[in-house]
Length: 197
Image (tube, helix red, strand yellow):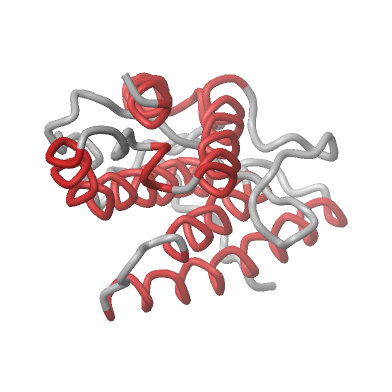
């Protein structure tokens, strides 16, 4: 079983927990627009994002992104992103080995990366819905970083990468504004606050 398969399974379990218990993300409960439930045929799931010195996602102690399941999603996505950068997508998703098996697995790499991108996007939506702006910013930055790893990005993926970057900046600004104004999290079912003052 590849690293990608293990982390994907862990992340899928965390995302299911967020769906079943929206208050674990800090409130909200709005449905996500994209699904990460599809199977790429490898029997795996997992991922994570945070923000590091390169401007890519990685956790830091200052106002840790959400509590419980949301914080764990951030941590797992960060681990996945770090390992993807360290070993490369082919090794991360197990696309190495005998020529025939490696070729078949390599063909699935873009779809497997896409799963991680959508997982980061969905976790960011849960964070935003729960008023966890810092977590949303970190997850959206991770979404953009994961999209940058696509071997041959489509125009839609490039657009999503740009949108995620802009939305991460807006969420980071809202986190800062809330920190300065001591903004409360939205009530369950209430729409998230406007990220721009």
